[in-house]
Length: 203
Image (tube, rainbow, N blue to C red; front, top):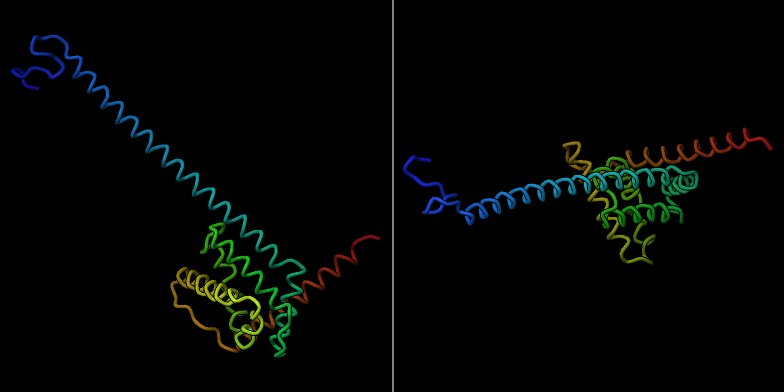
């Protein structure tokens, strides 16, 4: 501030300019309030993101537990056996229902797509293409099921392809057969483990 220039905090008579001081104080308060608001907003965003991530993980753990439960392993085994033998069973519809429940969670923002895609994109894709000749008949009583599942297949395979930095590919018939045989073997192993647990349980 130059020597010949009066301070804006002083009036023309040399007294304190209270109006200027009040305006300066108000400006400082406004800047401080804005800084606090930005800090609070940032913290709230971080908390929301943390909560969303935890919710996604919890949903993933629940889905994984359901998918690998004894009852679901049995359903998957029967469904795979039916597809391998060319005689699709009612259990295939129940496997598809599992994925429809997953689609519901995704649609309502309960679970993050990249997280769920890494775990479930492959089996969904395999069951989807393995049931190509029978799914219309299987889902005929629910007009929205086919559309929901097709959308889910596209969503999950796309997310997994993006994670892998590779284009999504339609599985070959041999890849589908290997997957179904693995599902059947996995189901048998689960049954054997359950029987072994029962044998170890004292009467």
